[in-house]
Length: 334
Image 1 (tube, helix red, strand yellow):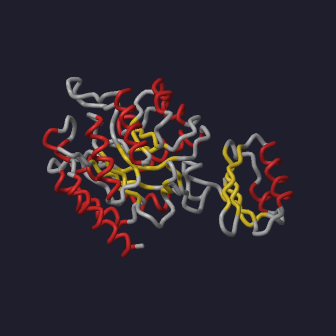
Image 2 (cartoon, rainbow, N blue to C red):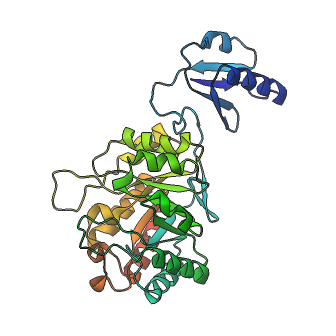
Image 3 (tube, one colour):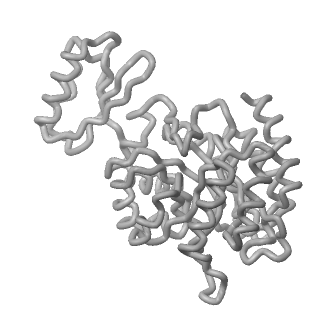
């Protein structure tokens, strides 16, 4: 249930209503917009008399929310959310955020070289895998703690915030220097992990699962937000379909659908979606045209010898060309 207050309600009257709602064993989520304040009522609202609340002179309207997700619903929070990642604002609706870097951190020289290259062309966040979930147990699993150390070195060298994947909540103490924690597609419905992240004071990049619906993605975001961490960014990285020409199928329709359903920022990952470097630029540009808040692209200084996903990685020179094209498209679509 949501309760929309009239404009210019006094602080005392607002607090009086909130206190009464909490006395009814409800949690109250407060969203302050430019003209209205929206109170989102979380809990068992079946016994709450909506007509009684709506009759109050400070209340403009009351309505029940039919969606199973509440906190991430646009009805609870009408205005777009902006998430701060190490000083980089994501979701403000103006600037396109470019996240780039190698699939896996391999060496100090590699990660610092790539970090410097992407920064030169305007990337705002450095990505790099330290812990790598791989389908085969024989594939490169990442440098783990050493990978995190090297990411921190690159961060100090360039000033770029870093994003990397967390696979096990027991590793959370190692992520003190990480600015944005990525939850990969395979862990999108690891509900115990999501609940623990609700108590973490860091932004979370939540990737859509390989075979999950948009509603399931939002329900996973709700797990994190229900625990108290509302710094969630959603990421589309392609879903599994019958098509074999690409690694996955990039669902760009998710952008306008999510805009209707949620206030959370949206990032598109065309590298994992297509699996082929030459397909990444056109899909990245299409994502910008569709209104994404950011694009995450894999960039490697030597893709032919990459230890992980070299086939889908751009060279720094290719990323520079793409960055120019994406910025032009962003200028047109606004």
